[in-house]
Length: 402
Ligand SMILES: Cc1cc2nc3c(=O)[nH]c(=O)nc-3n(C[C@H](O)[C@H](O)[C@H](O)COP(=O)(O)OP(=O)(O)OC[C@H]3O[C@@H](n4cnc5c(N)ncnc54)[C@H](O)[C@@H]3O)c2cc1C
Image (cartoon, rainbow, N blue to C red; front, side, top):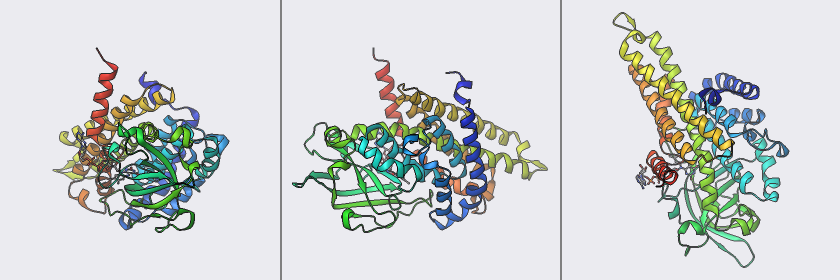
């Protein structure tokens, strides 16, 4: 793929990314500091995102969405993350949930959930991790057993569920056959419905508790919670893809969704790196030492040069992975590379920008301080850098078998 093919935008992509950039400049950047410092859910910003249709970007038009592809979504996520990665976190799990429904859901499930998801009225979370595991997904302990009345009863504890409180549905991976060998063949994805914003669910959703949100270093505003399933009853029609196609296939479904999730995290790395570079370019031309702008010192110019070079490379890798996926080609290796490189680039650019800010970078008065606390998340979520290297290495060997 030529570079121009990777970076070119259609008229529609230009219009939508310009619209999102303006939204970020006017609504997110001026308000992020407040919500970050208070660790408060950015409700008014999320309401405006609903009005702009941002919860339905990839949902087909027949269900009320925009029906756009992963590439366009990636461009939007870069813009939102340039403003604040917590905002992209609000739609990230929703995007993965809608991908799971579009790809694996039954017609009835699509009709029941997608129209309300497209407007953002119903928001989705997705949950693999547990207190004792994150990388080793096959070690999941949360389990579901089929009851005589046809329902499934889910028991167990989930960890680090982004949008765990405010979402109305959670795509949750649980064990349905403890004897399955290998274990991944005994896992199923359930669509667990819940009351948004309620910690003790009752009535049809009884048995699902959301403990107080986890206190975090950064990535504030959007909540990450545990979820406790204790006798939660899930109807058979909420098995993703239906019981016949879905039971025992949850692991494969979730791993497929993680591939697009990784492209999405890569786009977040590009967005935060872009913002860090913008802040560094501005500050380095304002601050003077030894009688000149610090931007005139070669050591600072080299930092700017390295940041801009890595940023461009990260953007190209990210767009390549997205475009391959849209073209229906294999993109597992490319998605892993994009996620690895772009998240590391996010951290690198933020740290270099922080250094350029000198002591002021350590002050909460400066935006870079927030970025410095936000960027490390991208090294962890959707698979750590170590796990990406494992994925890349495995795929490389598969594609180059002698
Ligand atoms: C803010 C936040 C939001 C999150 N949101 C979600 C969410 O919405 N849904 C969800 O399901 N999860 C979510 N997570 C969980 C996240 O996906 C996990 O934290 C991540 O996958 C790592 O798992 P772990 O924390 O259990 O680390 P571990 O798996 O315990 O890993 C610890 C360390 O060991 C390394 N390691 C592990 N195995 C290997 C190996 N085989 N070889 C070499 N090194 C290895 C890891 O790279 C890491 O450095 C979130 C996490 C955070 C911090």
